[in-house]
Image (cartoon, rainbow, N blue to C red):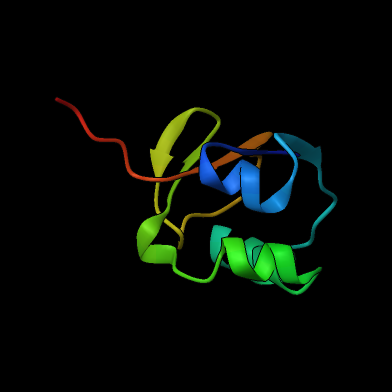
Length: 81
């Protein structure tokens, strides 16, 4: 699946997008796998309350299933003004 990073997530990880092979069943499990890769991933995922996730461009939760998902996007909460 493709994993996309936006805003400060992209800056901390150093990539806008990557292809990930995973056996994770949920977004939370994927986050655990990614966090274990390197310190930069651990730092980016340190505070999940500061992150949102979208699965195939639909806003979702961290306990959501990854079954059939082709794209996961992580980004900070958006604000309007």
